Image (cartoon, rainbow over all chains, first blue to last red; front, top):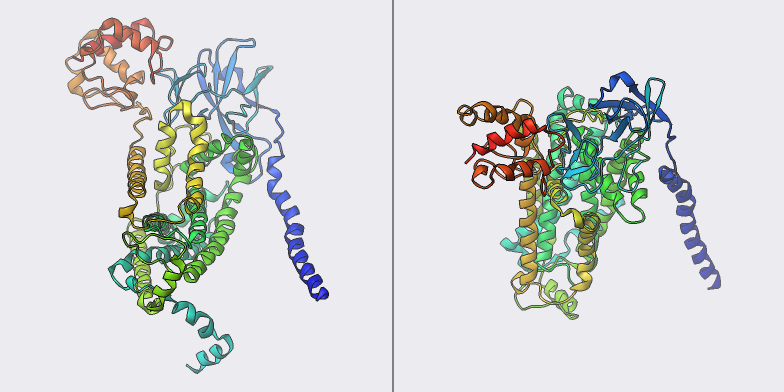
Length: 164
Length: 462
C-alpha cells in the first residue's frame, strides 16, 4: 500500500512538472513584449521649410525599429504646429491619437480645431481640450531642430499614463 | 453494413454514446416549450460553422500587418467562392453572438442557473466571455481602418486599468505600439487559443447538461431548495429520451440556421472592407461591428468625471454579475413571473443595449465634416451682405458640423434654426467667443470681423 501511495505521488508530480517545464519558456516568450522597450531615437519628420509659420501640418513618420513585415503599421502620423520661427517654443508636435481612447484626430483649418471621429473629442490648436470626453490635452512628442531638419522622438502608442 | 458492424465491434460507440444520446429529459420538453431549448445546440452548430469556414479562410488569409488587407481583398474579390465563405464566417459570427445572448437570457429568465446547475452557468459564463473575445479579435483580423482603430480603442481602455493597465496594453498590441508583432498575436488568439478554450469549455458544458439533466420548464410557486435534486430524479423517471424526442428539434433548428447563414452570405456577402489600415490616414470614421456599437455609444456618452471608474468598471460589473449570480441566488423561485426584478433587469438591459446601438449607428456626437457642405438655398438666398458671408463662414468654420439650421447640419449641439429668438447680439457674441459646455470657444480662431458676420447671419434666424 505504501508503494501505491508513492506511485500516486509520482504520477501527480510528473503531471504537474510537464506544464511547468513547458510553461516557463513559453510564457516567457509570450510575455516578453511587457519588458521590451523600443529604442527611442530621434527621427526626422521634415525640413523646417515644410512647416509654415502658424500652420498645423500633417507628417508621416516611419518607425525605424519596426519589424520588416510591419507594412503600413510601421508608420504613424503626427501633427506639427509651428508657433514661432525659431527657439524653444517654435514647434508643438502632437501624436495623432485622441487622449480619450486613441482614435486619430483630424485638424480642420476653418475652425482651427482638432476633431476626433470616434467619441467626439475636440482640441484647440495648442492641444488643450475644447469639448467632448477627453480630459487631457493632446499628447506631445519631444522634438529638436538639427540644422534645417525637424527631429521627433517617441512613436509608441500614447496612453493616459504613458504620454511619451 | 458489415463494414459498420466491423468498426462498431471495435469502437463500441453504441455502448458509450447510446446512453448519452438517450439520456432522459423531462417530458414537458416534448411540448411547444421545447423550442426554447434549441438555443444551446444552435450555438454549437454556429460554432461548427465558424470552425469550418474559419479553417477555410485561414488557408488564404495572410496574418501580417503588411499583407492581411490585400489577402482579404483577394479573398473577397478574386478567390472562387471567397466572398461566400467570408460571408458565412461573418453571418455565422453574428448568429453565434445573437444565439448566445438569447440562450443566456432564457437560462436567466427560467432560473436554470440555480442549484444544482451552478457550474453549468459558470462554464457558460466563460463561454460567453470567450465568444466576446472571438468577436473582438475577429473584427480586428479584418485589418482595415475600422479594425486598426478598434484595436487601439480596446488597448486604450485596457490602459485605464489600475496597476496593470500598462502591461495589459503592451500585451494587447504586443509591444510599444500597434505594429508588425500585433496582428500575428491576434491571429493566433483567434484561430488557436480561444477556439481551443471554447471547445474544451463546450465539452464541459455539454457534459454538465447531460449529467445534471436539462432543467424542466419552471412552474410558478415551485421554488428550488435542497430537495430539488431528489425531485428532479423522480421527474426524470417518467422522462423521455433526448434522442430522438428532443434532439429532432435541435437538428432541425441547426439545419435551418445553417441554411439561413448560407442564404445571407450568398445574398449580402461579407462586410465591406474599409480603407487600408494606415495610421497615416487621419480621415477616418472608426466604428466597431454591430455587437460592440452599443458599447461605442457608452464610451462616447459616459460622463467624463466618472470615466476613470466606468471604463474599467462596466466590464468588471458584467464579469461580476456572471460569476456571482449562481452563488447569490442558488435557491428560490425560478419562474420569471415570481422574479419581477430579474424580468425587469433583463428587459432593461436588452432594451437599453438596443437603444445604445441605435444611437451608436448614428453617432450624433461626432461633428460632421463640412468639406463641400452648404446650407440650403432657401436659407442663404434671402441673405444680404454680412449675413450672407456669415452663412458661408457658418459652414466653413465648422459651426455647421455641430449645429442644424433648417434641417442641415450636425446634431451634436442645439438646433440654431430659431436661435435669434433665444439669444440677442451680445449673447451670441459671448457664446461663440467663449464657448460653453460642450462647445469650443472661437475667440482665437475667428477674427472679430468673421465673428460679426456669423452673428449677423444667426440674427436672421428668428
